Image (cartoon, rainbow, N blue to C red; front, top):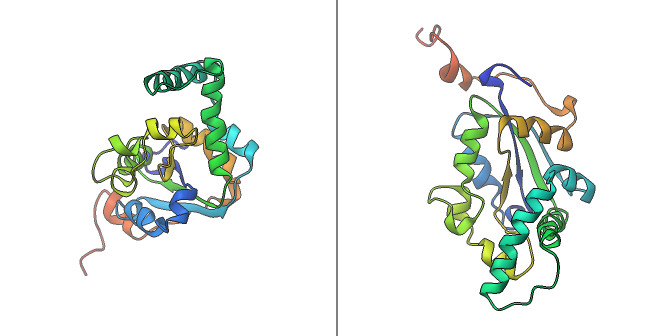
Length: 201
């Protein structure tokens, strides 16, 4: 793991809905304006096994999410047709189906507190409850309830790492080490240099 705070990394993936709705420029520009640095980027169609490795969920997670789906189904008078854990697994399967349905744009962002800043810009996972001003809050309208009823993944435009540790786990799933480019942005001087020698002539 990178020790210096300026080198913290976050994985971001613009999902198929972001690509299909031609929102890549809008989304990328929101990150660029912060001063965070892009150190890798690629357009690809993910593989199913890559996505299952990426999601990395355990039985406890499947049970918790499955219980929520059962509650939604009961609320809407729908039949309960399988075990709680299977409904939980269906969430990841739906996400895998969605991720592999077309191209995504994956990139690695580097900079001080990059994970926290990216999460703030992206917003909460559910678009309808995500804050105004965030990518998910401003650019899409989906909800957990609707996606659950339709038995599909929530279409929330972007994946981002949840913690620096999670970013370190996720990045190698999508990028080889030699695809991560070390370089200096001129703008980093104004963001990070202790004294600003050289600005005045």
